Every structure is written in C-alpha cells, then in structure tokens.
Image 1 (cartoon, rainbow, N blue to C red):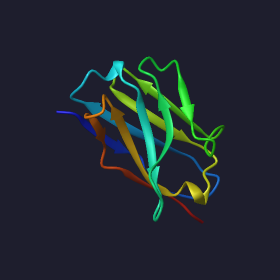
Image 2: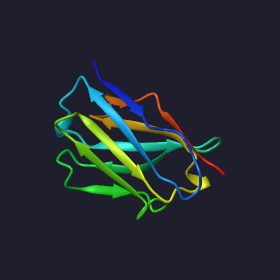
Image 3: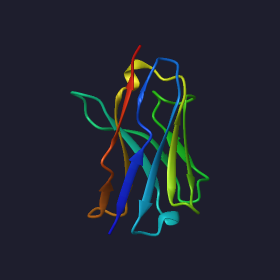
Image 4: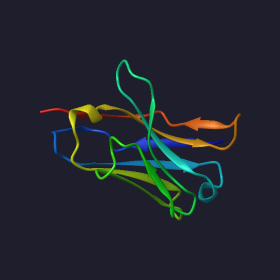
Length: 117
C-alpha cells in the first residue's frame, strides 16, 4: 500500500525558511520521480518541483526557482523541499506526489505552509 506522509509545514514570516519532508512507503521509492505540488485557496493545484529517481535531475516552477530546492534520500525513502526567502504568495497546502502510471497516481494528505507577518 502506497503511503506518502508530509510534515514540516508551519507559520513563517516573509523571508523565512522551512523544510518540508515526505516519507514514502509501499513502493520502490528510488525508481520514481517524486513531485511537490501546492494548492492555494481558490487556485488550482500546481507543480512546484520534481526530482528524478536518482536525484540527478530536478525541475522547478518559475515562481520558486532560486528559492526552493528539492532533494531526496533514497536510503530513507524521503523527499524534501527546502524553501527559502518565503513570500506570502507561497502560502498553500503542499502535497507530495508520485505518479507511477496513468492509473496509479498517489498523493499525501498535505501540509499547510502559511507565510505571514
């Protein structure tokens, strides 16, 4: 059974940092691209960052390039999202995702990130 459990969300001031974690289980973690998405109130869910199975390739949304870093530890079956220089517009629920194929697309429960003074 695939499980994705996010943690690390919090209330932080603008300019601050947070690190999100996603602990994965129930599948061969190291062979799959892992994704972080976010969804702000009233907006569609958007892809924030993605990382290849080996960690050698990453992609970012333009809105977070240079501020966020995605990484993974295949020995711990965990993917991370380091978020720096946070802005109020980064406020959202952040979700961990793995898409194995068209039918097998899994999500975590989400973790709330609020950027506010």
